[in-house]
Image (cartoon, rainbow, N blue to C red; front, side):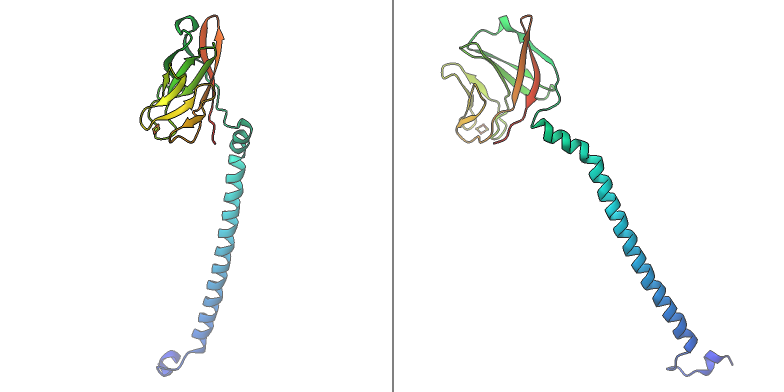
Amino acid sequence: MSNKEKLGRNRKDSNDDMVNLVDNIERQNDLKYNRRSFLKTAVAASVTLGVATLPFSIKAMLNDGEEEQVKVKIAKLSDVAKGESINFNYPTDQEPAILVHTKDGELKAYNNKCTHLQCPVFYEKEQDILLCPCHRGFFDVKSGHPVAGPPQRELPLIQTEVINDVIYAVGRKIRHG
Ligand code: FES
């Protein structure tokens, strides 16, 4: 009969205790090292992520709402009389915009999705104002700021440039406030 078999059912073999003790110590070490390596990995991942996104954060801070400049032809200046408006898309074909040639000769352009619930905004020649008919939101034609109705934010401003009688959209500024 072996030594183990000689021991009673409720008695413990001291060799087993040693094995359990060593086992427990190793398990605790495993846990400790796993926790430590997890923390190291998490810190390293955070630092890497922070460093990787730093250029975008700096760009966003410096841009102040200014987006990458895309130059798009809108129309011939001679085709848009004072007090008239035309629609175009900027900076992509999916983003509708409006250009107004004001009565006093200024060119003003905005993305024309209302900042309330995205309905299209039109130029009201008689009142010289931009109107969203959905809930009667009004925007100042010279600034794109909301002046009446539900909209609270300005329309995105599109910068224009005229070269040889051709009007171009040359940049966009998303504004908040
Ligand atoms: S969507 Fe323009 S006022 Fe509501």
